Image (cartoon, rainbow, N blue to C red; front, side):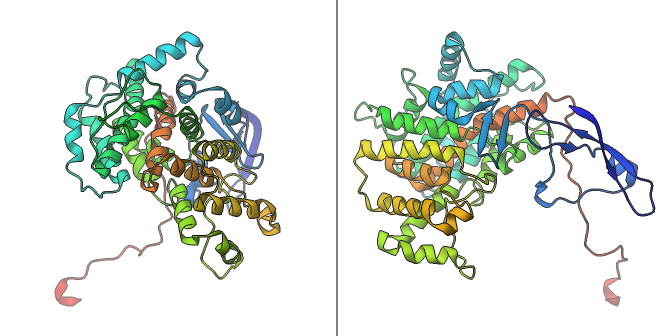
Length: 431
């Protein structure tokens, strides 16, 4: 991984210092500056860590310029088209796709862990009925660490595997319960005769009054959403999970920290913000007005769901979600719905307008996934919960990779202190 090439740092008044250059399988080369502080007395300053690799990872790769997303080397397009979400979860955890027996065994293991401890249902009663579901999720997921002590030796591979299976299995139950509590409807127990995504929809939309029959087109759409959001390299919430886990914290507490980070509107709240924007625009006739505002540098208005911080080309996940979006709207007969017609008009302009094309402000995955979830019947307040459900697979995989890395250390970023210089306290009677 480390090449014979060196990077030379020249500092006024000091001899040049050489640092090895590390070469990845794919992506940017990295200068190994781990000895920088001890050899020079200097640190690097990188606000937001935009040019800093915080870890070595074998899990996910994003090539923003090419518009590529790879899970364990597999393009996201191929995984979404050929695998279900639990196959992708198996891949992320184990490094390879399962064969038929491994797939069946893994699905059966997950089904055995879908129930939550009955006492956990009482946690929900401690929240107001109108509490944001992400606030509920942060509390309830963190509380899992108080219920499962039998697999607390995280140096043991079997214990880590049990923790992975438990949280991946229970997140759909916890998310659905947050939704039911918010609406005042009774909790629905999981059904082991259903697939992972079918079961989630049953717990979300089913009632004790009659048997719920999941629509296969909608199940497929939601399963693809799960797959597309399962991992996304070292983003803010994943880095949060890794940093919390670096102290040896319980993985369930680390996932709760990741959920809290994901809740931020600059991270996981984008698809919720996209739907709110569509509601604000209100009608197709007002699209030109808002397009003009988006182009106006002096107007703070931004078109949500267009462009991406990482992808400098078309978001590869957006291409898949666009097809899924078409399928869902057709299945539900919503092609002429006011909001969805409005979204289609915005999409058309963004793909054709010279301003958007030049700046590569293409519709991203959040634009389409928000439309799909609303069409399915998921309220906007639950969008980020769906995101968290899917991303838990990636978070747990990243956590385990960090825990088992022989080079892993507790996270300790440095700082550039710009506060007051050292000074003495003046007694009160002399101030």
